Image (tube, rainbow, N blue to C red; front, top):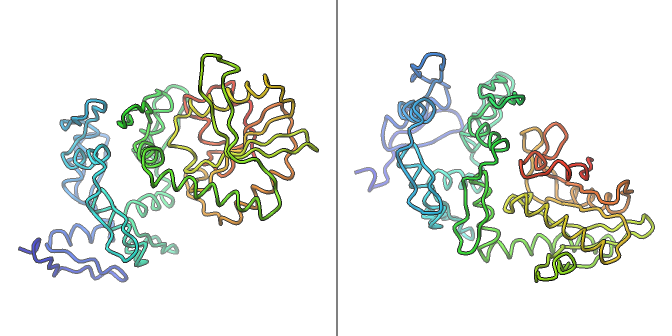
Length: 387
């Protein structure tokens, strides 16, 4: 009856938590997220994985050891398989766009495909961070249990998942990260856009979601313009001149083609014999296949050269959104990013005829992660410069 009445008489008594549940068993499972107790052990020899709930152990056994995935997506362009029916239900919402869980805070209206995502989102309004690191001297708190689990591995240094591709030896603390990494070797892109006429494919489900929202919804297209406008207003405020939305026709390399591309802004720096091609890459342009991004830069450069352009070219790819350094999210103020963008525009002296700079893109060991994508050609990597 409590599912109907909403009654939740079982409350967590850990300091600063206050989570409530309608069943004592749910409270018992929750308390283990604070204590770290994992009473359910995998019995497979050599594994040693432990879990707070029996369901977690069952899913682990099916996913890792038996590789059983009996739940198949019925979308004919997808074919993804899942270990549990719940995973399939959530996945199907990426096709239907169904977001049944809506934020009730006034003026928000954000919607989510899972109740867990809504719960985590609500904490951005309340400021609640119920998950605390109990390692002595730390005490960092998190709004999401998954973030706490990832954080704990900073203390343990545990990286049990190793890439088995010959010559690689990369190791990861999270199985999902290993799966994503493996696709950089195989080139597998199991997540395909189902929008009519679009053939984009991605190696990560998150990139597909970003692509769909950015490319096939009015909200995404409006956001792109809004972010781009912010950058251009900053350039105006510091006195940097530019040509906005410059179109490059590809007819000079294919006289039968009617294709063209749009460059967000072109900045002329004649005193340095330099032409800067500025692209505002929301979410590091993960919504776009890497091969398309490379083709755009190569074909546009070829057309400009054939059209008589003699200046050295800098493709400046500026990411205004979240990024990571060696797997950890870095928070950089917007104004600091803009000032660095200004610094590059005003001071960069090119050494090559064409260069590519990724500004505020995720990096690993000092190199932009995007260049490790299997579609990123070795020959094009020679154009990438580091800051």
